[in-house]
Image (cartoon, rainbow, N blue to C red):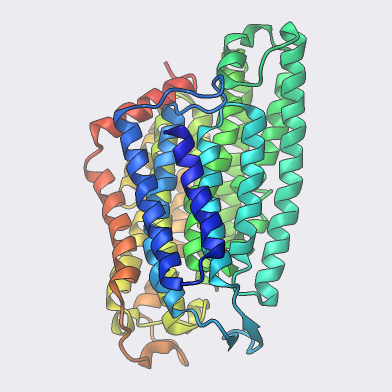
Length: 491
């Protein structure tokens, strides 16, 4: 099953490069997403055995993130059917700068999208730090062409920034992996770089090299995760990529990068260096929330606003894990909630962009008149992403704040609450202006849009999912989150 999870989307991606029929290609895309989702569902019932001496293994931590990747990719694939059908293949004019450009061939887009799913899946299954590093790097290479889909100068700039900054980060993560290997070599001369083996021999690992490994891997994978101040690639990439790609970047890829940090955190926890790792996570997490707060207020581009919101929520997740105890549970639950809510918002943002042909918040107003279905989801998405009850994000954020008070971190708890309050007000002004405002020269007089089921149902399902997690936490998910928390040192 583990090999099937990785190879099926990889092979489907290769096939998609050669298929000439758009209809066949889109069928392959959705069919692969369905098969992947079915395999992931089966993994909840029958956890597959590790393979390759434990290099690839599906534990509770990996299962949480794999489920997010698989579920979100399925929704994105369904949404992409309608999105690709509406994208003309010839020369078109850029609505922002009136320059001419030609979209990337659909075969490349669909193929890279499936390879992106395969590489993210590999990240969730990797227990060997070398394989993990290769998988994270592969996510960069497979997703870069997706960001460059529109092939105009802004998408080119965003792609280069993504490649250069993430490559620097991944180089630092490689250095951290070398330090980890050095620490393992000092212990017995031959400890494999497998998570379980390193944990088993944790007491013999050299603490200075372990600390150095964590710092470099935190900075390296943290760059990919979008933690401030290493986040500068993220707003451009999320803003210029097609919305279906932005949903995957924010909802799935950032989690995968965080999983890399959690894996090395497991080793530090077993070696008695958990507090060292937690203090760094708290620092970067809090900084991310504060930086995002500054940039969200008065943001003029709604896709960039969502991107900065992703930075904020990565910070919240890092704070949850950094606090420890029930904060870890809250952080993992928040990773799920954020993926669902942000995936929904980016897909709806794609509907808004297609109708109003602008990413400017001042050019979009009175949405209920032009996009009634998407408007409802846009409003629901705002409530979900800002942690408003009864959405699941409220439960996870509340768990983190309660854990902060209970563990003796009142300053962090109060700072987080103030930042969340400021972000709520800042985002409310933008969302409400877009939904109800009457800005001059806006699209308020545009005719009623035809919102197809493919563009409406996927974000609606994601909305219901994050709402459902606020009303009822399934026992199976609760059990897996508890199991994953134990892997991160929670007793």
